[in-house]
Image (cartoon, rainbow, N blue to C red; front, side, top):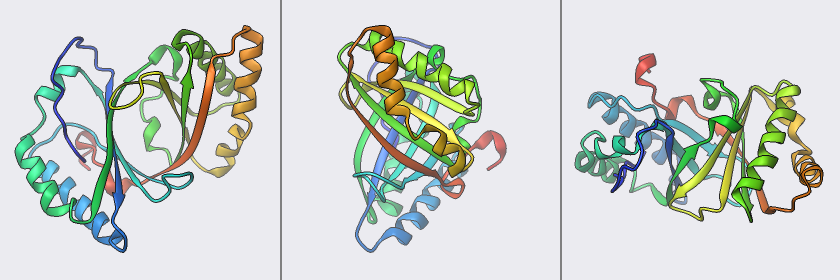
Length: 228
């Protein structure tokens, strides 16, 4: 993972997440995985209390890239990351030779538009949906209806975020978690449902949508509270 300190702390709610996207160098995938696991060992050995989730992207334009993320932080937490200089040095030793960072961005979790599950991101598959909207308020009204619909279909996990740094801030990001492909298939027509809800709300706010599949990698994740 790549730890980058925030320069300000406007709020103390533990609702901020950070994502980093890595592209393994050609022919270096196994070395990248090995090096990243070594870097996780550095975090473990240095008493990092943050949880880190890891996925490979299995569809779309970013196929084959690796995503790591950490959640449930206040802005102030990023001023207190574990040994940032040593973290960077270990990244340079074990990860940078085999993979290139594509982007780092932060999100704010939106609990009022999400399910309350505590372990959403440990599910096997995540449908990662990025929505570009003309109006955040109207876009979230559509998201709320999508959540209620999929909860009624017994979808296990529906997490909503807005991008707050490191990318266009007119974006809403949804992470829908599934135990397997059969459950995943229940969201096959999610875009048609979103258009239906726009019509029912009498708004036209979703400018573009993108969906990709993330496959969870427990061996490239770290949860200190679990002893893993």
